[in-house]
Length: 515
Image (cartoon, rainbow, N blue to C red):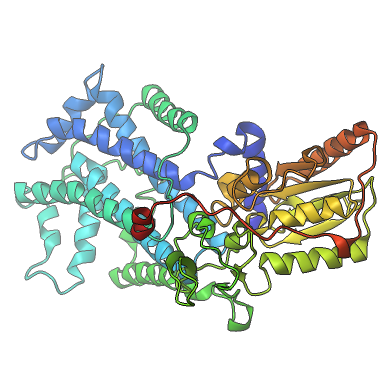
């Protein structure tokens, strides 16, 4: 149900913004963008902050009409946006089951990022030292007192019997500055197992996000609340919906219950990679290189989204280099199968050679005619919603589909081929949809051969809830084929030969050694 709801939300955002600028596809990069905004605005606010007068210094910044007011407001709203974006990104990865195996490190480091963002926001709110800050600090002290860390209760500092020590504000400021460093380290770990990580959204989306924060900061500036006073009961609490929503319930609950809820939530996040891991018999196998077919062209090494393939010297006496897959890093996306012209690499049963065998069986079963359009593509896209009056050939990921599948269908007599893939910004295997387009139309290695009539081929991006996009693409391609005025010439499937070679790249020996 959640996955279906997310697919409908994706479709709505695609209709509004297009898949290139769909913010739901860019939740991770939006979180990083919010972090950049926080760093820039935070540096300005830090110049005016005084631990000797925390509330007064923040109030003076808020009173600056030209800069301080909107900069502080942007800082506040960017912190909210960062937490929301991280939560959306985590939910997306969970619903797409991109949490186990080689992806477990990214999930666990992402959970750590959520915790660090939360702590950073907590210390930031305490720096303001209004009634809300006092409530957060007092509740934090109450929770810490339950742990055997201090010789006397920390919460005594917040009852008003003595002036708040400057050391408290210094430590809080230090934590607020140090936590972003920890965030940066956790972010590096988060993307360490992916090739070519994307940290920022496209420029139009980045500009729109910053402009939206700026507009909200101008229209709804954050105002200074009354100064914290432990001797005044019932001070107003300007709760933040994202960082302190839990505060009213926590203050009324026993400490043991609060700690139990926190540990339970943390434990649940930590065990997600094991809870979502398929049973052993259902786990897709990692890719394997059939070294006798490998020409050392390095294309699978270049295309792998997770850095699971390396080039090593051959040991079979042929000389040169051969691809080697690290099973611990492989997520079985199969993109290497689509990138290998000789069809010598891929998960068991999903190599290019396996795909050719499957498409031969498909031709024998469906026998497409010159006016038929065959639908080919990802079974996670809207292909399942496509019109049933067209033959359908599915693959686990469109990026893993070898271009020879399309060539074989056209040469076997299909009038046209409509390839359906997830939007590139939401490919479950990161770059599969991008490499697919380049192989079909831009000559990327393992490319669709020039002898194939491109007028009979089309590619559409359609998420799981965008069946109308597939229907429109199908109708458009049918009209184009009809306008051609001639039927595709069919070859006997048994007589169709596919080129199983690629052109080795012009790479120097030194560059190969570096790789």
